Length: 434
Ligand code: ZN
Image 1 (spheres, helix red, strand yellow):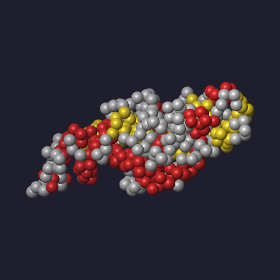
Image 2 (spheres, rainbow, N blue to C red; image 1 turned 180 degrees about the horizontal axis):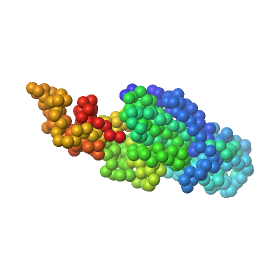
Image 3 (cartoon, protein in one colour; image 1 turned 120 degrees about the vertical axis):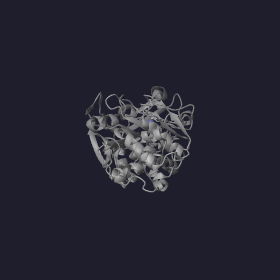
Image 4 (tube, rainbow, N blue to C red; image 1 turned 60 degrees about the horizontal axis):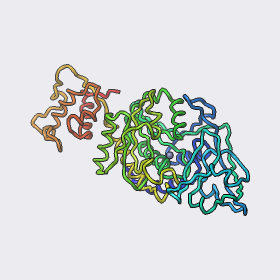
């Protein structure tokens, strides 16, 4: 795979400052920039649309926001950081004493230099997020402040990006990332960029599976997408929920809802083969959009490979989750792991013996050694030779087990087994089962 570090760094810089939320022009601008990388289709789901138990909210856009002290000096300015404003804040222009709006100020005593990230999507409100240092230096009990938020809530739409890469099979794998966070780099943006470059890489391959790749706002976007694509989503068995993969810390992976599903073992194989240490996060009902995709009606097995996983790093949901913390090279290393996982998924096909009645006469198909040859030699790290594996595949392949599971049973490398299975397919004694 190509090293995308430089492109990742340059797109990080361009996309980081944009004000994104669950709706709004910042999301459209983000998707348009991503269209330089991959041919995403931008779709709009209108405000007011009912999606299962939810309703797509009004669209939120913001031009400016600030707080001025009694001398008329801007002490907090949205233009310095879009995290200063609680996402979905309604417009306001009013003079107030600190006591009257203290509850509208959010800060973190434990991380005094960081601006926290707060949202109020479904509860009409407004608020400012500031660092604890700013709070202590700039705000005084009896002073009067001028509060200004120039935002707009209108009937608009929720924007999503979608790219379908058609493979030889109509069976789909889902790759999903969320793009609803404003200026934070690991949470949200690292996943968006990894997904874009992963899609760019996949585009050039002759794929077996069809890949449904979506860029959505978290939660409401995933729900809206499921509701608008229900039949497709119901037929998907596996998904990659790509997020928080660009930090300097450890790799990890969140398991899918069925602990014994093969995808979890496959991710661990990828880590081991890449000689990377990793943290295993068992499935739990909290987290990202696997909450929707694994719900009862869909039950998709979703995994997330992370590098500084959400909830787990100190700068999570703060202004310190920035471009000093996140680097293109970290995202690129996570990208390599996702890519290897997909390459394994692509080989995990189900085959069926086309001649299940008794044994196949292998010599007739030029699969039996006449005088010995490579077919008799032991496969590396195995006690079996190719002929053994041909017989094993003919015995086992009835269309029920995937090749990965068979490779585990036989303790043989998936790549080796895949090559042998393909050879047998080319001789028409195995066929792929959808
Ligand atoms: Zn988040």
